[in-house]
Image (cartoon, helix red, strand yellow):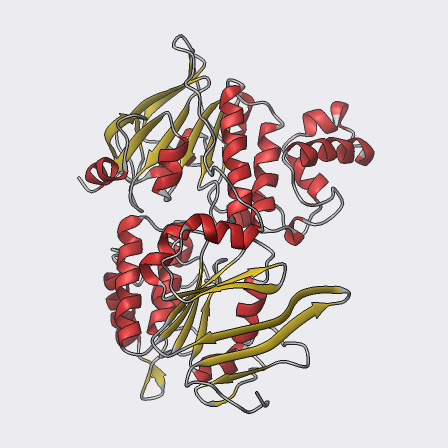
Amino acid sequence: MGKGAVEHDGLVVRNIGKTYGAVTVLHGVDLDVRPGECVALLGENGAGKSTLSSLIAGLVTPDAGGHMAWRGRPYAPASPADALHAGIGLIHQEMRLLPQLTIAENVFVGRLPMKNGRVDRPAMIARAQAQLQRLGLDVPATRKVGSLRVAAQQQVEIAKALTLDARLLILDEPTAALGDAETERLFEQVRRLKAEGVSFIYVSHRLAEIARICDRVVVLRDGAHVASHASAQVPPAQLVRDMVGRSVDRLFPEVSAPAADAPVALAVRGLTAPDGSFRSLSFEVRAGEILGFAGIAGAGRTEAMRAIVGADAIAAGEIFVAGRRLALRSPADAIRAGLVMVPDDRKALGVVLQHALWENLAYSNFDQVAPGGWLRPSRAVAFADGLIRRLRIKGSAAQSAASLSGGNQQKLVIAKWIARRPRIIILDEPTRGVDVGARAQIYELIAGLAREGMAVIVVSSDLDEVLGLSHRVIVLSRGEVRGSLPRFEANSQRVMELAVA
């Protein structure tokens, strides 16, 4: 095909590549997306999905030799503005919202509606509010984005995309922070826009979603196009083999039951938030037990966990670790008691991206790497090397956390806390944005911590994850416990019945 030739009236990508110095991250990739079509773009972290998406969206310039066409004309965006002007928008996995601005201002930033030479704020707020309602986000469009939890911010990102008059939207992990109800509302919007001729490139690690919303599948591995499927009705096991080049026989590990006489590691009694985001929350988790928390976005799961570890204030209630009542003034009090938490937003709350792995691991473990108050880098590096080997982190102690894939960053956050040998670890969205191979490793790690006698709490929007890992599942709805299901009773239907009660 000649440089100007076009095969159809959608997006045509031919022989696109990208190198950074001596490292080739994308080479010779072809991709077609026809009008009204949703194409799944799959691959492990580091496979080249984000680079390809960035090339199409004008964030990155491709190497010479390849070319793109869009709607029948050559397409070579020099910036995201060029791509948006052409009708192509990218919704990032890592959110790019401005926390000090309102939801409406974020949705329309850079393209504020004007009237008589001034910003038409009533129109801007009304249009943003309408999009939020379609997505099921019941908050005012005048609220500051910085006050929203991660799941709500993700919906704002999606609302921003849907208000663009785009003909091709690239959705990078759009449901990573969403529950089933919010995901279904998004899918309804995608189906409606597809019927209007809008195209989608859909990047996700949630393989169960692919068959529901996508028309075809393209798989990348190590920067190359390794597989295509003319239909999205492909067994997940086949997609896993395509992505990792091998079979992942069992995603969830065997979870052995804790001892019947295992002591209670954590007891929560009548916990209530000042803002009512959770009320009268009571539960126990025993040593060696994995306790799952399920519920739709806004159920109060993350808010409750933050309060339990002292990150947020409580209005009422008590927390006991190993039978001792905690007087929490800050997370440091919880950490000293053996209660730690892996947060839901690893980049904002879990790691210092510009700092080295050994530095990140040292920050939470100065008592081990700097006894007496003096830090010896050689001691800290040796400490980090041991954790890197134990958790199979693909990186060296000296490299920056920003250079790691999402899955390895998540293992880094887990590593810094399990190094303290806590009694209880809370993992909020432990595999958000993590590929299948790294996900299986994290699941095995979680099961291993329970086998060693640690009490583990898993909070996740991925219902399969909660069901596959947990000995018991607690379901929250509107800030209250609606039920506690043992493993043999917990299934998706029962959980969702309680979640919407």
